[in-house]
Image (cartoon, rainbow, N blue to C red; front, side, top):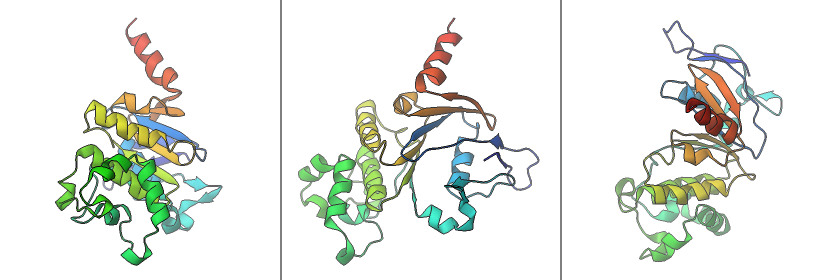
Length: 231
């Protein structure tokens, strides 16, 4: 890609010539300190920011030739999931009229996101209302509804932006299991501070000051670096 980007009225690039290749079905992690450029890079990948230099291509075709088509393939799962004061069903099939909700797709999304047990325990199952901003659900349950939503809408690329950062360890494990179950069938791009969440990623990219400082397996980038820093 050789992507460079600077914010309007800024003189310094925050993304400084980054190039990377992601294979379909691969899971990659972007790690690094705050200000390293992770979120800006993801905003560029999402098509929210246009780089001043470089290009993003899918199968050799620039996403900018049909940006809307690219964005329809991408599901974004942030740290805080937007939920309406409506049923679990409508929050998963968000934006789809009731008569067009596909029961098979809905059930598959629920299973992949590991929501089956929760829904069985709810008083009205998938027809249970979640409350304003999902107040009746825990953080982990809201995150899993966000994952189920992306699955239901058949997004091919899932971008998880600190999706487990606010969760306790047990809940984080449930969400991580749900994410990991998608590996191979969906292309995953994961931003994380908590390194345990990216242990199973195919590749890890460590960003420093807008550049890729290191890339490789979790062991090569995280464990070996930690070992050397302790020598």
